[in-house]
Amino acid sequence: MSKTITTFKEQKAKGDKITMMTCYDYSMAKLMDQADMDILLVGDSLGMVMMGLPDTLAVTMDDMVHHTLCVSRGAENAFVLGDMPFLSYHISTEQAVTNAGRLVKEAGANGVKLEGGASVCPQIEAIVKAQIPVCAHIGLTPQSVNAFGGFKVQGKSVEAAKKLIEDAKAVEAAGASMVVLEGIPAKLASIITDTVSIPTIGIGAGAGCDGQVLVYQDMLAMFSDFTPKFVKHFAEVGDVMRQAFADYAKEVKAGTFPDEEHSYAIDDAVIEALK
Ligand code: KIV
Image (cartoon, rainbow, N blue to C red; front, side):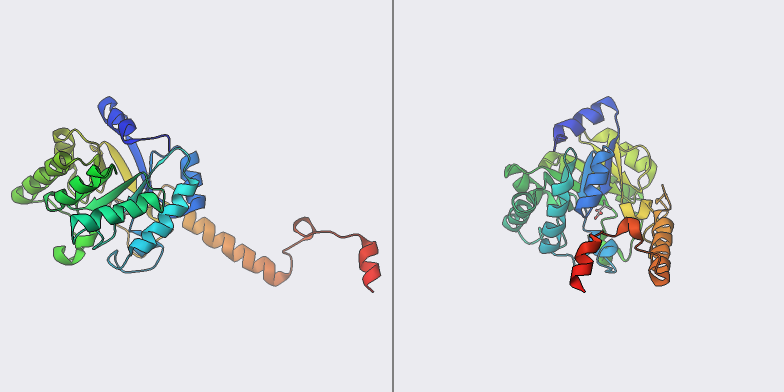
């Protein structure tokens, strides 16, 4: 890690946008690091895009430790943020510090992310007191899917918008180093960004945030179970992969792969001696 929470604070002050991308394994971490990504988020979205679950609720601390360790081994310069899964921080501040500590000690995370606003401020304070940087996450928080009655854009009424502004101020006061704003109207996200001094990272929250995050399988068109409105395909990698798998299968069936170029040679004398 060469990028730190100080880097991101300075980026906000200079108006230099922060880039965050989800990441769940070593090879991807290396590619994203080489692309100079600022932050690799090992999101609990891995439950959906890596494990095929309908939502993030069943993801465990062990799942998060496993994937975060893979990512931190591949990240040389990027800041690695480990996500705290559902019910890994809700029960008590002790539980929150213990689990945040696992992501740092066992998995090499540089900071942790957790969902919620004012209601999780005691947990944020306790984790920060343990010297672990925290990224808060407000708006359409996927761990609240049942409480919200689905994946719905948040903050659309005056009351709901005011609550989100208060939540952003509360997590900043509790010591969070940054906050993800997910699934909220762009103009509201801009107001929140101007209100707090910590960087805001948007996903489905418009261009006014201090940075942006996307799930990599979404932006590479590798995941089609569910595509939210805010997802842009930056490359049709899913099509490229599907074609490559089909070409491989065709060549294996035809016996044209592997050819000489992709096989190991041996002296004829050795083969003769075997006869
Ligand atoms: O789990 C995740 O990947 C996230 C991002 C989408 C912000 O929380």
